[in-house]
Image (cartoon, rainbow, N blue to C red; front, side, top):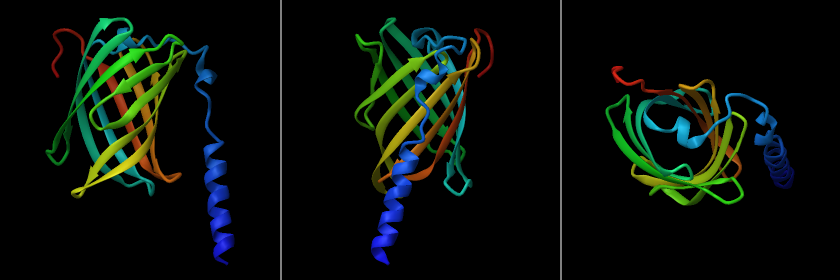
Amino acid sequence: MKLKTLFTTALTALLTACGHVDVEHYAQEKPVLEMSSFFNGTIDAWGMFQKRSGEVARRFHVEIQANWSSPDEGTLDEHFTYSDGEKQRRVWTLKRQSDGTWQGTADDVVGVATGRIAGNALRWTYVLRLPVDGKEYLVNFDDWMWQMDDQSMMNRSTMSKFGFDLGEVTLFFRKRVAGSPS
């Protein structure tokens, strides 16, 4: 009986892993995402984390200050404010590679995040150190972003550990227009 359960679990994880869309599927979508153009200046984002049951466990706002030393190298300084008042900061350093892919690093990212862009879509994959109730967990992120227009972007990330979904993060990004309130 235990062998059958183990086999079923492994097969489910394998089939789930094979069901992903490749970022190239979005190659013809517009507007074409240019990292240094969209992520430039001040950007606001509103998001939530949903447990795998669908329950919204956390809501948050992020203010992002994005700066570029060249079109191929930039920094995203993210300031999170959660609905319970907790604050957090993450600073991403982004670099375009010679093959057109992107790499990103941040203090709470294990190793290097890797990203590919096609059309309006960006797919990042990385491992994040996630603090929960005084403990730290390493979780895998499959992070998708789609530029909707010149000012807005949607983001959906799935979090997993050992091949099992833990939940999803959904975000909406909006570039701040000069003179508009935060």
